[in-house]
Image (cartoon, rainbow over all chains, first blue to last red; front, side, top):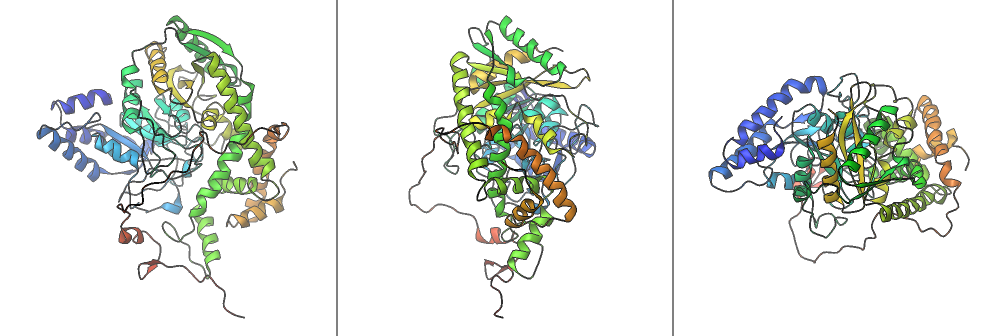
Length: 473
Length: 99
């Protein structure tokens, strides 16, 4: 598949029309989506209109922007005005938002062509897309396996070559884990780097939007485009967006990289082997590699599964059948709320709402939610100490390659463990990237993860580019 | 911390405006208890004196200038509501009838 960088170059130079690029992408989506179910909604009309607008700019001698004519997929928890947005939930089925997420506006302003909305675990709660109310997405490398989640549709769309770029959201690993399982690049940016205006909220102190791409260069270009302050998101960072594509060829010579035991222990042997090979490669390329243990990271899973559900239980209180989405009629308003939420939410969402409600309830608040917040401080301090010894940390992205459908659905805790290496970064608010690095014994993709402190995206893409170039075939 | 009981789950479901079947109540009790038991590693820690983190970066309240800017179109918003009346959201009875 043509990269985003090359497609934009061709369209900007007038060598290829955006319309022909969009039509080609839509044809691949039409051919592959029935089997993969990566897209919940394909916006053919909107894509062709956006492409024609890009072509009109080129014809007028105006530069359409760095993503000119690049087809892109949007996770279906990004609001798109007049285009169905479900968050993978029955409770929002048929809803057409009256506004568009900032990230989508920025992509379109840069010339990108949104082709549709991708499948996800309901409200981004899950690690396999099996929690989507509209059926799971299949892994493009093996249709009997999950694509990961929650942004499984976006990862599969890029992994299958339907689009070169996609957007996802990452609350506990929902970009990085599916990217690893589908063999693509995924970035969880620093908290606040990308505006979340128009992202359907899950856990507001953790949620962050980021890109999926077939290459580190494309991912860097996309992140550069969507990053930057937005007055509509009070948590968005005020500093200017970093220049990332300029840093791609910087290499790792002289960098200090720590191989962190807690970021691969317990993973399958083939995953651990790839992580060690990645460390050796980084060292050969001139970085100094040390081994490090950060025991506090082991507390991440427990802290996350109290904090994220607590925030979710509050955020999802808005689905009450009053202003938008599903309503199940009843005689009084409380019964209407109950009937609507009971029918509209799926199992995992109910589980997390109840877990969060419990963690926040009188008598348990300090023991669960309060303690988890203190642990969060402990983890942030531990990361801070690690970043005094190393510029970047290295580990696995997911403990296994893509797993079979149904293998973890009966045991929520087993499912939650697939995010054990990604969760710590969300709790600290820092940045991380996953890059494909060889395959497992089953022939399926493995991703390795690089972590850095807040606003280290330029260092991360430079190191990821080194891994990408030296990755085993 | 004690393990979660079936009554706890029923209570929490009521607070969260969810109705559970008997079968769901049993299943959720086991599943939620497993997650809370896993969190026992946190309760064992003595973190007296460690401040809580609610948000990854310290953030101050953000205010904007008090000027009129574009807002959502009323009719477009109301068009997405399950039920409206006279440009307002319409809901079932809120206050019970007098006995």
